[in-house]
Image (cartoon, rainbow, N blue to C red; front, side, top):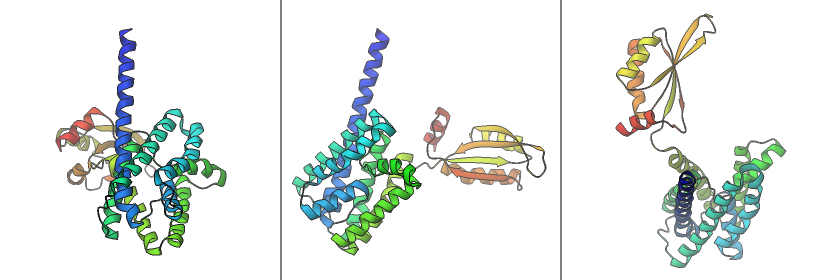
Length: 292
């Protein structure tokens, strides 16, 4: 019984935590829309963009449009992404609809400069969307639609989303002005980068594979001098057909320069393959990042 009670408390605590962050993310996004983008007729992509265009054309409440247009896409998510995602997305979209109404009645326009409104508006918008995504929700059903349609038409999800947004920006150019459409395209690219920063953080971890005949010395130096944990992987050289030891490790962006310099000093002929790591979990890595 005590264990069951503890589990219920933990579950309830997680639900409350998610609800708080989903609400926070939605209100940040709503602030960006109503105080930066909407007053300056700058369109976002996806369902939000469609809702904004219909709001300009018909005068129907933006929050209501966001909720109504997102509903079919949220229903599609039941079969693809599960009930928890659907419930969290519905909650987040409802909070966004509420937020747009709250900020609309405040009548706060931060700036009327189109460039400033675009840049700062989309940074704030991307932050809000990123907070929602990080807590397993969504504010836009475009990617859900793309996930379903991509298999039917043979396009990737990214291609479907891009095509959908190009269509929206063309409509924005016809309905509003082509200048607004161009600023709107700028929002698309800035928003994606801001969302990445929110989801991945600023540490920018790298996965590194090192091939060298002096693998043992390099591995020990990384462990002892740089405090970087390594894993040794056995492999076979394609040309030599000889057994090789590959060093695998994950380093933060700030450690990379020192690491490459150290490896080259030990073996100038060593081979390094470096790639971005979007998420890193583990106590050791977290402690090292905290030290930097």
